[in-house]
Image (tube, rainbow, N blue to C red):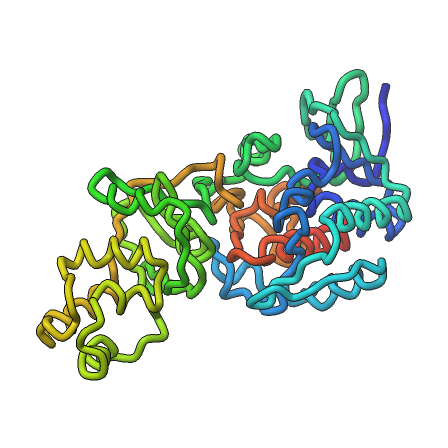
Length: 391
C-alpha cells in the first residue's frame, strides 16, 4: 500500500508533535510515526510528572553545541513567551517553581493533550506502535516503509530524540539515519546525568540521601543549586547541570555553605569559642554531612582550641572541595543527550540539511543541549517550529 503526504515526521515526542502540528496547520498533509505505543512518553515523565515545559530565562548561551551560535535563530523566533501563550490558550494552569522553570499545576498529560489537540486541528495522521523498516530517497521523494505501508513525501523530519533513557524507547535511530544521508554526528554523550565517584570517596557514600545547596564548578561553568549524595556518587540539580561540562579526568569543586562570608569560622571562634567545630558546620549543613566533612578535615573539639590558620585552611577547602568523578550513570539516568546530528550540516533558520533537500532534523536529535530546567523543551518547541514553518 502506498500513501502520499507533504511531510513525514519520525518521532512523536515534544519536537515531532509540535512540528507536525505547525506544518499541518499550514495546510500540509503530515504523517507522524513513532515506534512507542503512545505519543509523548518522555513528556509524561518529565518534571516529576508535571512537565517543566519551558524556562523564562531561555538564552542561547544556556545551550551547549559544537556550533555555539546555531540555536540563536530558532530560539529568537519562537520564545518561551510564545509557548506559554499556547499553554494558556489551552487553559492549562502553570506555576514558576525556581529559576524561571515553568511547570503544569496539574499533570504533564495536559501538555501531551494540548499537542495532540493541535495535531487534530491540522488533521495530522498519527500512528504509534509502528516500526520503521526502511527509509529511502529517490526522485525528490522520501519513502518510509512501515509494515505493509510505504509512505512517500518530499520532506522528512527526524525527531526521534537522543540516546537518553533507553527504557522509554530511546535508540540511536536518528544518528543512523543521519549517517545514511551523509550527515556527520557529534559523539553522543550522557548529559544532565548523575556522576559516580571512585572507591577512595567511599566516606561520602555513607551520606546517600543527604542533600545540601552548593555551588558546583567545572572549568568556567558554575551552578548554585542542591547537590545530592548517592550510593554511587553525586546527583541533584547542581551536579546534573555541571555534568554537561564535565569530561573524564576533570575535577568538580563543591562550594559548601556558599552564603558564609570570608572569615566566618574565625568569627564563630571569637564569639562562641566553646562551640564544637562539627556543630559550627552543622549550623548550615545536614548533621551527617557536617560530621563527614569534619572527619575529612581532621578537625574536632571546641572551635576556640583551633588555630586561625587551621580555620582559614578549612574555609578554603569548604569553598572548593574537590571531587574527581570516575564516570557517570550513563544514558540510563541521563535526562538528555549531548552531541547528535552535526549542526554544521543544517540551516539554523529551517533545520533543513544543506546538502540533502527536504531532510530536516530537530529537537534532541541535534547537537544542541540545554541546561536543566525546561531549556531542552524550549529547544524542542523552537526547532520544531522552524522546521514546521519551512516544510
